[in-house]
Image 1 (spheres, rainbow, N blue to C red):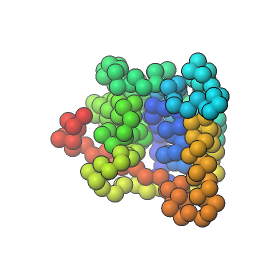
Image 2 (image 1 turned 90 degrees about the horizontal axis):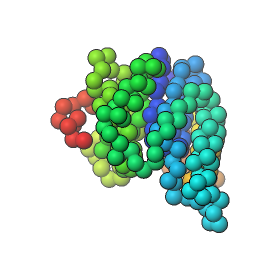
Image 3 (image 1 turned 120 degrees about the horizontal axis):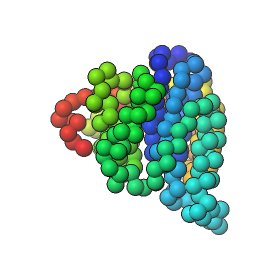
Image 4 (image 1 turned 60 degrees about the vertical axis):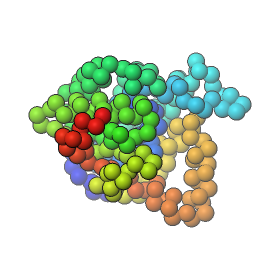
Length: 229
């Protein structure tokens, strides 16, 4: 599968499994073409809701479980440069803004990406998602030569403000890698995967289309919009 050539792709999300459902096909595609990819996962998702029924984990053991799942997801995608940044789950909105911007700036300075993938600010639902998006946008805004920004947006009914995705990427050739990336995060996604696989087995074309088409918005450097977060 041919996708645009990039010098280096930097992916920044806050939680293990954020990459799997939205962009693991894209990550796998770049890797298969020989493009270096760095995935910076800001937390270990240690406050994930699912501890099992009956419980398979405690609050103390869940971080290590999710760490191992994240490593398995990276392996499924063929990703070698995985960064676990060590911030605390469900607290990113309370982190110092400048600290967050500097963390992202250091990643950019080191990896020198031509493309950054993250969430779209104001269209990402979860406070950790929004804090991550803000930090990335603010870091890139300060740059003289800005890399491209491809953003994931899924904020329920508010997407009318963005319109249709700017990029819809068919990742069918790496579909199995994406499935394995999602399955790696089984502690949090078992019920979702069971439902999805049932629909796929029934030939649900909408579910198949969701699976093999990854959607992105290019960030719009509009001054009024920038000031909205």
